[in-house]
Amino acid sequence: MDIFVLFYSLFIIGIGRFVRRWPGTLSGYNTMSPDRKRYVDIKGLTSMIQRSMLVIGLVTTGGYFVFRLAGSRTIAHAMIFIPLFAGSLVVLVRARQYDHYPKKAKWPAFVIGCLFVAVGILLGYECLPTRVNVSAQSVTFSGRYGLTIPVSEIVRAELVTALPRGLARTNGLAIGDIRKGYFALEGMGRCRLFLHTGHGPYLVLAYSNGQQLIYGAKKKETTERIYHQIRAVLR
Image: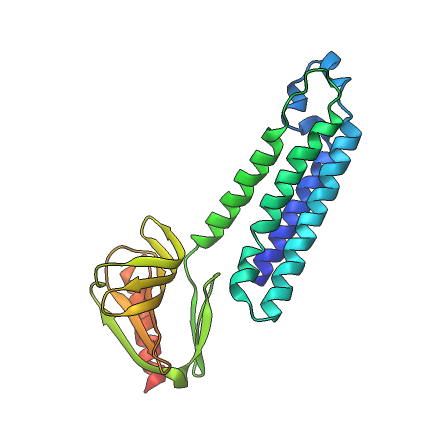
């Protein structure tokens, strides 16, 4: 996750640099007539966009790591979204100051485009298959909701063919068959899910603190392999 945040922030900063270097690519501006462009302070506009993207990128990275080190995992993850959306609104408002045409045009296309690209990247990352690393000391699940569980704290590992009904999201992602994060299940309570399939088998892990984790790969062979690896280190 740390590496993703760094690349994500660099991508945002790179957008600002790209627009500053090639202002003709700015959506809306590139379709204006030469006469219309004379009313736009394109140097000032692209400079403002570049500075804004730099601030958004730095605040995203800085905020994420500060809250992560402080132990506020939820706020740290929120810092991936908040600076971008808040900064985009500022850019939208300030962009109009650089258009001196009597009847000002709106400048939402660029920012909206950035939002769609950024959201697409985030969703793409969230939908990546969860990687599981099993060692003699611990079991690690990758991703935004990932964690490392010491083998000594695992009290039960089993395969089940179906999940209880009443799966309700409390803090997580739900897209199609993908379920990641915290969900409430009937008879099991609040569980951490890493699901990429809508059918079994599912791996259920119970920790010594009473919490449970459910993992299901897209291919059942993968789920079964992870199960057998965990069973092997628990013996």
